[in-house]
Length: 164
Image (cartoon, rainbow, N blue to C red; front, side, top):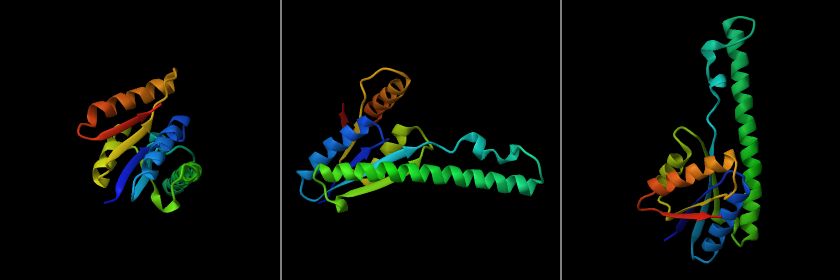
């Protein structure tokens, strides 16, 4: 049986700590895999609202400019995700995992972040979900605490590792 661990990552120091913990746990298990899972932002409404296209020109010209804007946004997101995953995979190898034990996946946030994480965990039949928690203050920390609290509330029947 393959032991599967889902590690929620966002490129923060906290997610690196979660990765370290999960990698060390997986390293000690026979036949284990980690999936580094990033929930990316939704495409901004301004990019999606093609019925309100600004600028000069015909409808077709505005629509083509809009498509280019969407494509550029998606390219930037993919580039950022590739860089984050390359860094995290390198860390996982330093913590003792083999490249074939590490998968990566991203999705756009369609629900809230914690629901996306739980849906991925359920679909992939993961034994544990691991995420980092920053005990710092500030708006970003408040947002992450809300995600952690919501996961604790919603993850009934699931193993959840919260790493500081």
